[in-house]
Amino acid sequence: MASLSGRGREKYRMKHRLNSLRSVALAAAFCASACSGTVTGVTPQPEPSVPANLGSIQHVIVLVQENRSFVNLFSGYPGADAPAEGACKPNQALKLCLDGQPVRLKEVTLETCKCTGGRDIGHDHKAFETEFDGGKMDGFNSIPSGTGGTGGPAKLYPYGFVERSESKPYWNLAHAFTLGDRMFSTETSDSFVAHQQIIAGTTRLNDTESVVDVPDAFPWGCDAPAGTTVPVIKVDGSVVTNSGVYPCFTQYKTMADVLDAAKVSWKFYVAPFVGSDADFSGEVWNAFDPIKSVRYGADWKKNISEPNTNLFKDIKSHSLPAVSWVIPILADSDHPASGSNTGPSWVTSVVNAVGRSSYWKTTAIVVIWDDWGGWYDNVPPPQPDYTSLGMRVPLLVISPWAKHGYVSHTEYNFGSILKYIEQNFGTGSLGTTDASANSLGDVFDFTQTPPAFHPFDAPYGMSFFLRHRPSPPLEDVIEKSGGVPD
Image 1: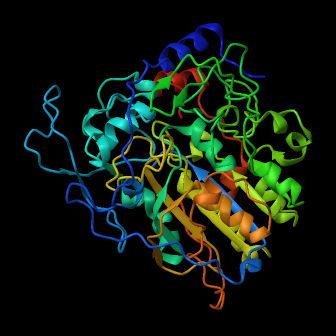
Image 2: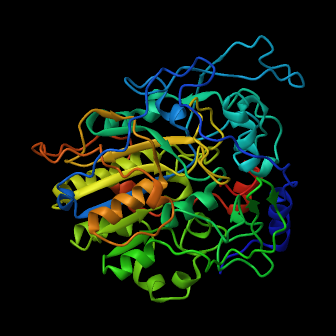
Image 3: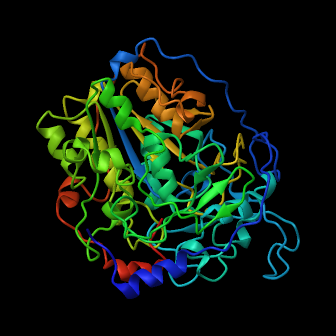
């Protein structure tokens, strides 16, 4: 399997070795309106009842994009809790926010972070703690740029929103269907843990520790080089970087177990392992590679579908499974420092492919962003335990049965998606965050007459994505972003 050269791997390891974090006890639950005066006063709604006509949805497609907070994509969206300014803690060392006034958000582009020569923004667990600041949500000016804290200070760059010309396709989908403004990532760190939460609802290894942050080499999973370890977080909040835990897990089950047991068809559409000079998303964003029973079992050949554009072929050939996860390549992921702004077009192309097909009236497309990427958000995530919840990310639910032009204020996390899938297809429960999370109940209205589908506009269409578009060489990406984008 693909791996870096010795020089590249050592660079990667050095950049992802974090100092041990101080022990902390995260605060208990926080009121969603309790910070800085920038919150618009939207009140989260209680858990909705389960819709009566769940069987109307026969296909669920989960599109997983990368690294955007809710405010970063939807600042100013009508009816949503998405202010145009953010709380900022005085930082004497950097001489920032000394007057205590909120920071006005500035426009940024999807394709690059201009804060320090194109680097990513820090968004590991330590960055979460700094930005969260005990629920004050004012520490976004005190994090580093670069993954793993490898770059210089990000300063006020995290206080940004994506320029409207680039986010317009997402706003168009939100106007037509349902936007959720209380979806929290289940984890308090970056993509490795986030993608585990999306398929398992947990990264808990035992009663005292869970996986946090990224492995120190890649691929991230059972294909990682011998000696690779992943950090763990203890129940007291301390993080152990040199944990000795290899990222090939047997400690928890995933939706593969639940769906296979109920004989519900599923696929995970992702870029393949093809080497460091190609689209590395298949090497680091394949959530099932760290799951030993899948990586070395029958599901790997049957249900891991490579490349991700096989989704279009399955729709055309009438072979779409009941449940799909769709993982973008780096260029189409919305990831900062990717050098590309094609993510909204990628999502729109999937929506249009389903909408033009016979699957439209029986499908729900759920779009999420795996983590917040370090970007400012104003709503403090509740803290039910030592591993969660993480920062708020956008949620789009696209379906003829989704409420039209609706903004949901119900509190969700990634377990909510798993719970909805379990309810919809009548499977068993994983018993992780799917058991405690609110289901995606209030986003559907099965009493309405499904409208005819009208294709959505975006700069790039399906034919663009069906052409092979390799990302930059992986070591170039590492050099630019301060580490493998996570």
